[in-house]
Image (cartoon, rainbow, N blue to C red):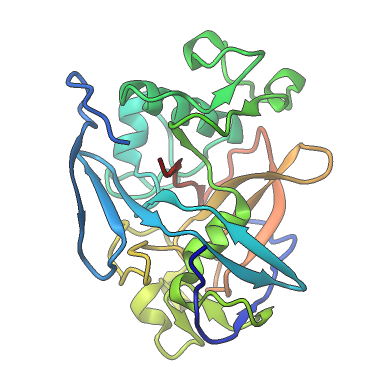
Length: 283
């Protein structure tokens, strides 16, 4: 286990906010181009034609009074763009239109279909199963209301395809070298910096934060990940007790909030300024 040594952590939980692999598959336009270490981070990188994944090394960090242990995984360096989403899913109406803007107004159910279809495009094993079926094309139409059979979709942890991050994975990746086993207090920590003095270098804050921006226009954090604080909220796999509401994390409404999370996104929701990024197991 690789221990991450750094300063103490701080996080304010924002509850109830009301807005927010290698593949050699030659027919795929998303086939891997190269694996390298580069940019602001030394993390291993998978460069695809339309998607770049950064390796998050295993480690542990304290969250409140609990120590979380995270296995290594790959995470997309940016939020899923409208260009990639539409290439996989077809037409989709967003709050603001633009190829390099993050997709938003996505239902939780739609993100699962997207992940499986992108996995199939790459010749990878899809992660999600509905009634034992992993081919999302056989799942039927995505419901526009809460649906028990779609709520029962399961995650195959052994599959090497794309999936939504778990909330603890997301927080660990956002903290980067600021992750620590010494303190679980998060009140003033953002992805890329501590406090607001440098925040504008890493996140859209203040008067520009309520607007959706092109991905990767600010600095990446120490893991080479962009927009983990600010821009759109990002969906996670984790659900509240009844399984009908999921975590959205990292976004803001009028002001950038420290690694905020809300457990309030309905399975059939299509809220503006809520998008997602994908992760993949490390083999």
